[in-house]
Every structure is written in structure tokens, then in C-alpha cells.
Image (cartoon, rainbow, N blue to C red; front, side, top):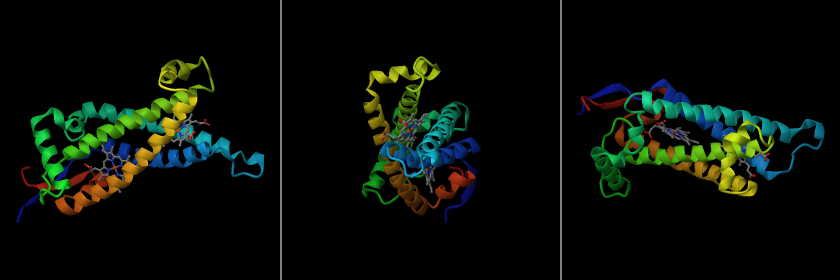
Amino acid sequence: MEKLETRYVWEWPVRIVHWVNFLSIMTLSVTGIYIGWGKTLAHDPSQYVMGWMRFIHFVVGFVFTISVLSRIYWAFVGNKYANWRTFVPWLFKDGRKNMKDTFLFYTFFKSEAPHVVGHNAMAGSAYLWIFALYLVMICTGFALYSESAPGGFFSSAFGWVFVFGSNQGLRLTHHCVMWLLLAFAIHHVYSAWLMDVKEKNGVMSSIFGGYKSVPEGE
Ligand code: HEM
Ligand code: HEM
């Protein structure tokens, strides 16, 4: 029988960012869908539901932005499992091999999932795109936000985003990327669960507590 040891893999900033992002995306999706719907649920205008939805959207939008920026910072100062290299495995020999083996496992050509302590190479590369989508949401979100104060700070910082589209184009992009993130979340929970069962390494609980079970000496 393989002997397992407990290893501290996800440091607290990685876990906090993950769950802050998750809660933010859920809140931003609910409030965003309401904003995009464009009608109000209130019969009495004094209830000001749209105003509250937009207010919550903007406050959580700021929280989400700080959280994403903190994770980018941590990719340069955190442990090796949090490092930026884990998101670009194809740049390294080991990463390319792990990517191939994980792909063969996912496509049923191999029955054993390759062992890795941090993100497997396929997951790491997928997360790179998720972070890119986070940045798309932040840039389009702040560009839309800047429209309420032309010439202000946000308009100077994010006005360039309008090079890629009009107000409607940016709203549509902002809206569609939300659905991409929600679709990813379904697949992500499924595959994390699958790897938890297959690898028996406690990956699911690791995103809460930080620890994984790994073969001794790996
Ligand atoms: C993953 C994160 C986010 C999600 C899922 C999300 C979702 C949405 C959705 C669905 C809409 C409605 C678009 C439409 O159909 O017209 C919206 C509007 C908007 N969002 Fe976001 N959003 C996110 C992040 C942000 C961020 C970081 C900001 C920055 C402050 C932001 C600011 C805005 C603004 C200004 C609007 C337009 C509000 C209006 O016109 O009344 N969003 N968002
Ligand atoms: C909007 C929903 C979600 C998004 C966008 C998302 C995104 C991510 C990202 C980007 C990472 C990499 C973390 C890092 O290195 O900083 C990650 C890791 C992880 N997430 Fe999520 N997550 C979501 C929801 C969830 C939920 C609901 C669960 C479990 C119930 C979960 C379980 C995990 C686990 C176990 C890991 C680490 C394992 C691994 O290497 O893949 N996630 N997630």
C-alpha cells in the first residue's frame, strides 16, 4: 500500500481569493442579470430595487477586483503551487508531459490519472483562461462604470476599453463572459470531484483547509 503524507499546498491567500471570487461571481451574476433585465421588481418606486442592485454590483465589483489583483501578486511571492508557472505548464518539459498524461486520462486512453501535488497541468492552463476572463470582466465593468462620470478617474483609466466596442458591445461582452464563467463553474466542480475520487488526495477539502494527501516523498 502506498504511504501518504499530509502536505500544506494552498496557502491562506489562495483559499481566501478562491472563495471571495466564488461568492463575488455569484452575487455579481444575480445583480448583473437583474441590471441587464432592465425592469424593476418594485411596484413602489421608493423601494429603489434597481439602485440597490447596482450599488451591490459596484461594491462587490471592487471587492472582486482587489481579490483578483491579490492573487496575481501572490503568483509571484507565494509557494511553488501558487506560482505563475503552474498556469503556463506548456512552457516547461515536466508540464508538457503532465498535460499529455492528463489529457489521455480525461479522454479515456489511460486509466490512471497522473500524480501532481498542485494543479494538474490541464487545470492550471484552464485557470489561466479563467483569470483572463476575470480581467475582461474587470476592464469592461470599470469602463461601463466610468460612463457615469466622463473625464473622471475611471474614465481616464478605462476609457481605452471603448476601442474594442461601444457601450452596447461592452455590455454584451460583459454579459456573455458571465455565462462562460458560470458554465466553467459546473465543469470545474465536476472535474475537481472526479479527481478527488480518482486520486484520493483530498483535493476537494484542500481548497477549504489547504492540505492534500500525497504519496510520501512526491
Ligand atoms: C465576474 C464578475 C461580474 C459579473 C458576472 C457581472 C455581471 C454583469 C451583468 C450580467 C451585467 C448586465 C449586462 C447587460 O446585460 O446589460 C452587468 C452590468 C454592469 N457591471 Fe458587471 N459583472 C461582473 C463584474 C463587474 C465589475 C468588476 C464591475 C466594476 C465595477 C462591473 C460593473 C458593471 C457595470 C457598471 C454594469 C452596467 C450597469 C448599468 O448599466 O446599470 N461588473 N454586470
Ligand atoms: C464561480 C465558481 C468558481 C470558479 C470561477 C472557480 C475557479 C477556480 C480557480 C481559478 C482555481 C485555481 C485557484 C488558484 O490557483 O488561485 C480553483 C481551484 C479550485 N476550486 Fe474553484 N472555482 C469556483 C467554484 C468552486 C467550487 C464551488 C468548488 C467546490 C465545491 C471549487 C473547488 C476547487 C478546488 C478543489 C480547487 C483546487 C484544485 C485544483 O487544483 O483544481 N471551486 N477554482
